[in-house]
View (cartoon, rainbow, N blue to C red):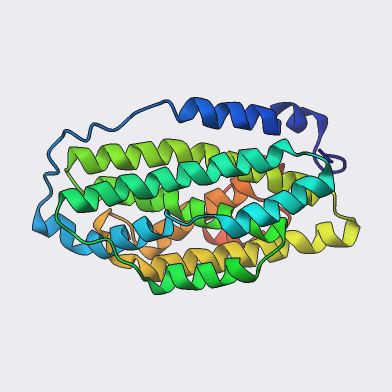
Length: 266
């Protein structure tokens, strides 16, 4: 893998190879963290503000990943890392598991699985025309960062043990998903020339922030039910931006959210 440039030797040592990611996803697929024999006890008061969002995220998690696989295959051929394609396939399979589990929960509480959501439709349209692995990776990092906050909010908004287990399973998986994608964006970033390295953090940040805002306004009721307001949500997202993306700009956001950064490393 081309990891020259800004990716230091110490950081490279912490990165997993595509073969190692394949092994990780295969091992994780054997783990069963959800007891579907539990009764889905959730009150109407708890369900009301979160149901539309649960339905929308369930739909989004069931994507076939066809366009991502095409982009990953082209990218893997270009960099000479055929194992990366299989790692991405297993990553998609894990996302689909989340959709299946959320679907089973909706079935269990007698609620329908929806076939259309405007946010999901918009994201699918963007994916349909995208062939860049860099944009794909950035999009996945942005959405999965919001997903971590979303599923934590859903867990906090409900006393239903089954739903909490489903959220826990997703949160465990998403932590590794973000690492998987963050390593890739670091590799892609490291291969850029000087001008690209100057511009990319700005572009990454704008995309990340806009995605954060779109998700907040689409699922505000669910986030609020989980104890968040816009400021606390954006502050959490800013921590994730710092952790996941190459950090050079915009530094002013750190001052707004009163965040101190010990290192600007990827």
